[in-house]
Amino acid sequence: MQRLNDYLKKEFGEKVYKIALNGGFTCPNRDGTKGYRGCIFCSKGGSGEFAEDPSLSITEQIERGKKRVAGKYKGSSYIAYFQAFTGTYAPTDRLRELYSEAIAHPDIVCMSVATRPDCLPEEVLDLLDKMNEIKPVWVELGLQTIHEQTASYIRRGYELTEYDRAVRELKRRGIQVITHVILGLPGETKRDMLDTVSYVVKSGANGIKLQLLHILKGTDLADEYLAGKVKVMEMDEYIEILKECLAIIPDDVVIHRMTGDGDKRILLAPEWSADKKRVINAIGKTL
Image (cartoon, one colour):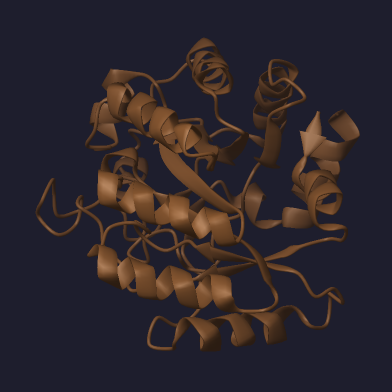
């Protein structure tokens, strides 16, 4: 099992800290192109609750992020992580400005962009390719599940073939791919989750993020949960499923996340996930 911290130390010679940035993006699932309400689980912040203030320049966001972690991180290497909403969903010229400013920062050793597979047109792929020639670029794809029934329920808004195309085109350009998977989506069995993980590691992805399903206030999923239509996993149940997922991930696929933590200000369930230290200790003990 290859964990992210070990991989980063090997690649960059020290522990590397990720700074979550906000490029002021939106999403085709919110601007009316494919929908207005986003994915059923997605918060109003577009999963960017921990990202910096989008009114600041990228350089200002990076410096602010460095100050936030100065008390616990003494290194000098950072990843510029475009986390909020869809990080490739903007005119190419605007993307070039944002990416170039991030990569030009002397303390940034890598850029990571969270996006949707259906938001990677040829010109954006070519731009990412050019950025990757300057410093390493990762693209994080929000797949969540391979099962079409679940994908329709969560309003993902694209077919699995879009994911396959995105991975193929990114890999062709030498860009690392990290795939997001949510464990515990409504209606999915353990077999369903394992099949998604198996598909991801066979797809050519360089890394995987395993994310516990969080119910966040203000989302349509929260309404479903409060109406008694959705159940969440208990910690021991999640860890057992996680253990089986990890067992089928080969050593050449980097594990970027094993649980994730929702913003406590808007976390509705599962409540146990709010105690991050306890969860991490329990996962470590089990594994």
